[in-house]
Length: 326
Ligand SMILES: NC(=O)c1ccc[n+]([C@@H]2O[C@H](COP(=O)([O-])OP(=O)(O)OC[C@H]3O[C@@H](n4cnc5c(N)ncnc54)[C@H](O)[C@@H]3O)[C@@H](O)[C@H]2O)c1
Image 1 (cartoon, rainbow, N blue to C red):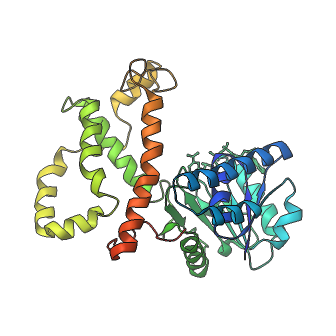
Image 2 (image 1 turned 180 degrees about the vertical axis):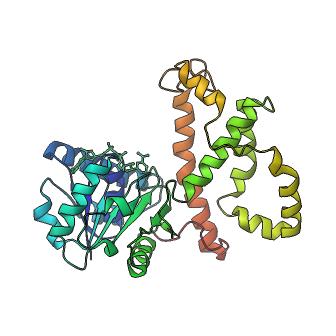
């Protein structure tokens, strides 16, 4: 059994604790005051119940996991006995740098220290850490207890052994880790997501299709096969010669700007910010965001289960598919 300390008991930290405890690790959630740490622990326990409700873990596994989570406010009580410390505090470079410095002074020399940062460079976060070679980013995707992907980003000083140890650990936790070998903003998956968003906005802006039809084209088309069929597997399957000729034909018409789309700038300037103002690409006074969230929250666990079932039944899911362990 390992001891995992999760620093920051907010939205991400709590659900990372859910995953860690279900993998039979002693898991301590740390926050700045006891009320926040306790609230995070409650959220982590709710995450376990959620996974039982969706039949992603057994009642027995859940009970065992719940007994392994605790809350704390003092790093010096828990970090000296930790095997891995996962930082998931507010996205602020100064706060994260200070924490990495403190944690690295308290941690055993063998411990690994990671950050859940979405956008900062681990090389910068770990600038004042005692052993930067034992640091990396482990970027869980929201909601962390359900989405299998975790991006391991190697900083300028991250040792290969650190990335390999984290990869092995996250695989044991039932996650699907990928290793990102260079430390740039956007990591890996967010770069691809931003490329999709840039083109989606461009299609609407250029009058090629409505927002509804752009979203429908993705949801009813490529998204249905993406859980088991990646884009590079796709072009290998159709033939790289065909892929090359399509790229030569189509790429000149795609958006390659390095600035945000004009329609996005205009909507923001008009105060149309989406759900939070009631209007964005859609009018949310006439559409139900509750229904949309409900459908997403039901779909994600069902998709995870479907891929696991395929994987268990036929070994049908290629490398990179959802892990069959939990
Ligand atoms: N929310 C997402 O969808 C998402 C997805 C992936 C990654 N992330 C990243 O995960 C990290 C956490 O995001 P979140 O959404 O959980 O934030 P959050 O605001 O929900 O939680 C952050 C928690 O950190 C605590 N905290 C702040 N300073 C601290 C300190 N010095 N010591 C201990 N605790 C401290 C806060 O009290 C709060 O409870 C950020 O780096 C964020 O960029 C967020």
